Image (cartoon, rainbow, N blue to C red; front, side, top):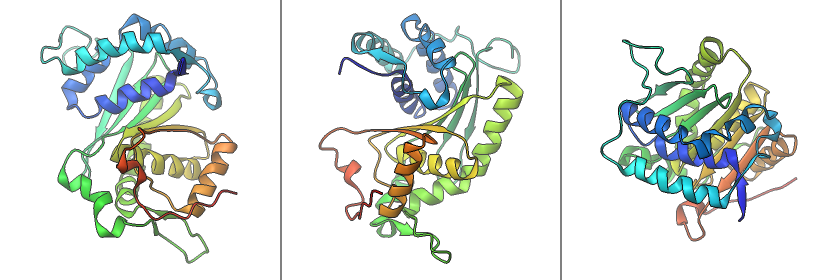
Length: 270
């Protein structure tokens, strides 16, 4: 491809960065997003309507140049600590970004990242980082999507382990987003959720919950994520995409078996 959506590329970077710990994350995030070839494009995201979030594009040649720098930063053991780091001693150092990390006993971490340069809040779910988190979609109860509530005729089905992870922390994430909006951005931002592998599955379910509870648009970009919904729910999700309540992209590598799980799906498209 000659170009891809800019928000997709930024989401890809974040889906990698959320594997780092607290200090390593912010050091790398600030260093990567300070690269002029990337940061000079942030205004294109900042001024766009959230429903048109995929319109700003970045060229393949730019991506190649940025990728080299991203890889050098991510794999370097000696990150320059002189870049802006938020801390109790000098809170004014980091003026453009604020973030929250949420962790539970059942799931490692989700990062909420508010960036004034983009006017976005990213909800970045960490992918599989331990045997326990991997069991959320590989145990027997996740072989097929589970219908969570059929008393009222709702036949929505989810991969149960990933559904539980997302459901348990949804309202905590929501409170974090509200805090970042009111305390830091003081504007109505675009909400973008993303993640790799297990994190991508969480991001997709989160985007559906958000569209149903908040009734506002959300962008969701997943990388190498398993399939997490049954046919009836996929149909509803596609309708929300058509109405631009969910702006969705799923990025997979051909031959990646994880992206074909669970194996048994009945896909219904209205």
